[in-house]
Image (tube, rainbow, N blue to C red; front, side, top):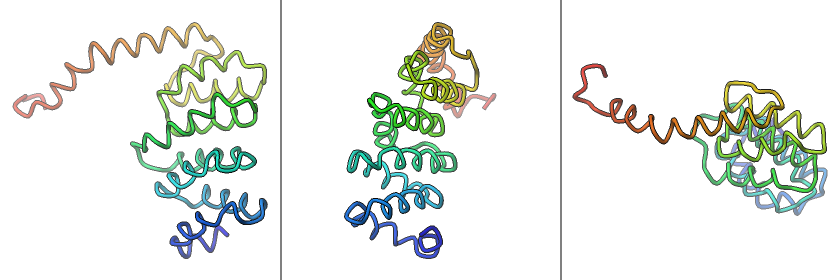
Length: 178
């Protein structure tokens, strides 16, 4: 499937319409192939497929994360919102994959939910949440949720208070420092 999709990218559009009408094994293989060879357009396709078939959500989210590793930023808000929503899933496997994908997608809006998952019952969810927090922030406070919350609070304050003035200087074309 990967070789076919690499040879004819138009196959993505045709296959999206028929994906879950096929056998579940074929659908899973297609989703994995999208994750391996896909780009920004396929990222949007996968995001639309989330919740279409709950038995495939884990593999769809994992494929979103794979593409998120190599697609240029900024990413479509709709993609980030869809993946982030799965951080509230009941299935720890789905939550783990959503945390991993949020890290690869560098979804800053997922920080609070990821911090909450540092206390999750499932070890793999805690581990992936810790990893995603580090990936998104470029720093590490381990499993210390209070330290992470303090960091988020400080970053939020900086962006509210300091960033606007800096952005003004960067946008000022008359500024000789530019």
